[in-house]
Amino acid sequence: MSDSEDEEVADTHLKIVVLGDGGCGKTSTVTRYSQDQFSKSYEPTLGVEFYLKRIVLPGNKNVTLQMCDVGGQTLGGSMFDKYIYGANGFIMLYDITSNQSFENIDSWLTSSKAVEYTTEPHYMLVGNKVDLEHQRVVSKKKHDTYATDNNMGSHFISAKTGDSVDLCFKKLAADILKIKLSKAEVDGAHRVVKAEVKSSKVESKPSVRSRPTKPKSSICLMQ
Ligand SMILES: Nc1nc2c(ncn2[C@@H]2O[C@H](COP(=O)(O)OP(=O)(O)OP(=O)(O)O)[C@@H](O)[C@H]2O)c(=O)[nH]1
Ligand SMILES: [Mg+2]
Image (cartoon, rainbow, N blue to C red; front, side, top):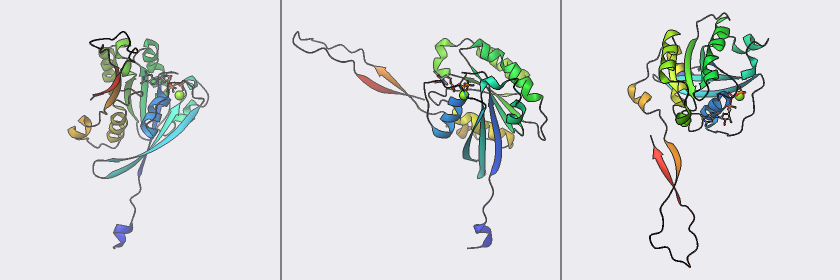
């Protein structure tokens, strides 16, 4: 084995900071991405929490993402600048069912831009909770206009189902490193969503003596 085969190429390290109002789903998003888990309960994050994930980008580029999950109550706090120091990229998260969380993106953006960076960070505007599409109050048009006006990438995700979560982080990392993702990588990144469907099938000939039947459930796959 030659020396060059022994040599380990060091991972590129990127700091990705997730910002947004309390309850919009920041912890849920990074937990989904790093551990593939989701919890329905809400425990507000105090200060900041860190998560790591190793990914491989096109060209066999090994990247370690350090994700900083910043609590929604830290905006305007004395530690905020320290949490976001040295960020390479920001995920500006809001909840598509909360107008307030979208309106407040402006405050998060202004605060994050008040800090000095050696290299200008990339920004991604991300609408979370698309599994609650029927409760959407922030229109796609409003989202798109804001992202374009502020030179941000744009995604819609669901931390609950995992829809587009991987793609969102991967795309941000690729943008920062100026790596182009292929169409197949982008299209193939949408995960399969499993939804339980209650069957409303009624027995055709109910017998008076028969016991009441429980509703049956099956798994519906959507892509
Ligand atoms: N339906 C649905 N609920 C979600 C989704 N993401 C998060 N939630 C729920 O929203 C609540 C808040 O989620 P968190 O991830 O704790 O919110 P956060 O942004 O970290 O909040 P802070 O730590 O206070 O800043 C929890 O009850 C989650 O289960 C989603 O994609 N869909
Ligand atoms: Mg949190």
